[in-house]
Image (cartoon, rainbow, N blue to C red; front, side, top):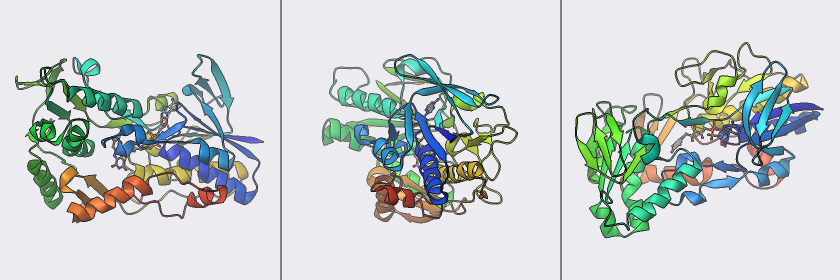
Length: 400
Ligand SMILES: Cc1cc2nc3c(=O)[nH]c(=O)nc-3n(C[C@H](O)[C@H](O)[C@H](O)COP(=O)(O)OP(=O)(O)OC[C@H]3O[C@@H](n4cnc5c(N)ncnc54)[C@H](O)[C@@H]3O)c2cc1C
């Protein structure tokens, strides 16, 4: 029996495992599929700016058990592409080896944390389930700690998509932990080192974002670098200081450090360069998918680090890795059409289409779409074995 090993139980890794199971079923392949991940849950990362992060993960077991995919919980810390095996650190402190005939790397991304004094110790982030939980616990405590210096000022560093979503959601989250009056009285600050908020958007889209930020009375500081973060302060590079007990960093993502175990060319986000089949060029038997891979989605654009691309790329990696093992034809990854849906808190949302982000809808109409995406479209499939496998076919529409 051949061995297909997938590392990473996120959007791309799970899609890869389930698509491979579908193809193996269809063609009667003799292949064992194993998914190894450090957690038995898939974290719904795009929702981690929302209230109640405790609800924002789903167990992998119902899908893996139903489809006969083996699961190993552990942290892969070494990949030997010569002898085709990986070292997996288990929670009990032991290390086990797992051999593969084909490997799919799908370990996602991590927060790109700037090297600033005090950030590690005093700043929060919402990059992982644990980090989002820690931030939410802090929020619950600080809104009630009215004697603490800076208790009612909330600073978000980085005005990209995640920073905007978190800042515009902050009053709702404060109200949940305290009350409406506390939320209305909160000072919310959004810090951006470049000249603009949401600079990935242009023209009309950007003005919708700014209207939402202004309506929410968010104090925007552009052209502002962070010099230091303390327990109750954040100092900016212009010499000013904000008194706050809450600093959250949303400064972008870079590919998982496990990519460094694979020889090969990378882009400036640390992603491995892959060919149209999602194979890492020059390293036999290794596919990369999701946030660890730089892949073309059409003739000129590259996939973003996003669920929109990760879920579909995962399917192609599962398809091509299983087809390689079965000696069947491969299929080039293509995913034309790009959309974004940005939550703007109480101002609704913004839905754009195309790489130039043309506004398709905003306000409540876009918010309905955002809710559909966040509560249904990005969720892994549920149901019987055949329903789960059918949902993971390449041709199935995957939302965004
Ligand atoms: C706050 C936030 C908001 C976002 N908003 C959006 C959005 O609105 N739209 C959108 O499309 N995308 C959004 N994203 C990005 C999106 O979440 C990622 O692009 C997506 O999760 C990538 O999927 P993935 O499977 O490649 O990686 P992940 O979902 O990160 O999954 C990787 C998995 O691998 C595991 N892993 C990592 N290293 C190891 C190891 N060494 N050994 C074993 N297991 C390992 C991880 O624990 C994780 O389970 C957002 C991300 C964040 C953090």
